[in-house]
Length: 367
Ligand code: PMP
Image (cartoon, rainbow, N blue to C red; front, side):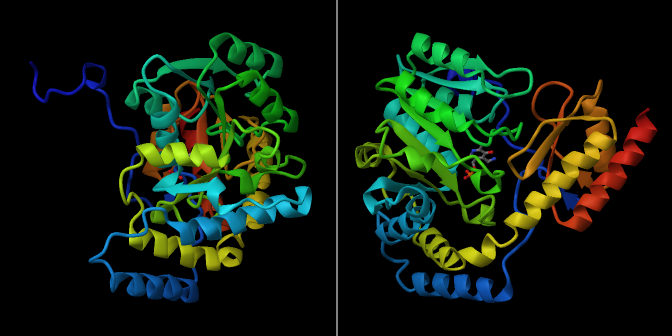
């Protein structure tokens, strides 16, 4: 046998991940460009200091304090519009929403079961399926990256997936789901779960409600969120979900014991106390995003409408050459999505000026 004796289907596969290059302007992983204030950093550090005194003990396996704080945070979305609160027993957290979704596939996928999403979409989805030996079924989006709802419903009814992964807004296209999509697909999925991945939801434009509002109507609905994007805590590694308590209970069967460290729990709780500050730049980032879409279109480029903190634009005969030329000028964006397209994350106004200047230079140089 060839060494190492890795599973056959994993042999030769490159690990997922964007290049981590040391460049002045990094606009490639959809992070929030604004770090915490000194006061917020001090508060987080004090919480970690406190947690450190009991690091000889395992952390709270059920992370109840964190789930309670997250439930209260999510309820701010559901109480004003629908008048119901999200309960602690409806919330589950893990090390990033990537881990949350892997746990969902561990509990609800597996051999002989299917997971489905609609391409182009987040490239980790097929990896969760592969890693849990779940069959992967790929549906397709329309030319403008929207979901053709009738076709999507037919695909779900035909394939009968155990898990449907529906990002809203979608990565890498930025496309939000129309309000009627989630309910319709929850019904089509029958006993299967519909996971609405709301990693970027805080950046959505007016008029698209969060799928959280539909939780009381669909017990097969799962809404995942992350603190990595709008919440400016990518380094903290905290993602979470809201769903029927029975779904949270099922995940408890597959999660590793003490999966969420005491330090992570302390950091997340302290960060949640600073939610207004950490989320305070969302409006600025949305404005910057809309300006970026407008500017790219003025340059004659094709640009996908975006409800997220990134923009997909194209199309280029040799996108790699353009990506490399931008890197050479110190601007790192992402070579992802359908052939010919590139994705830029929204940074500070200064970073976006650097991006626009570099792009003009590259387009000129490569013309
Ligand atoms: N969902 C989508 C659509 C994403 O783009 C990402 C991050 N790129 C994630 C989930 C996972 O983020 P995290 O694990 O940091 O919560």
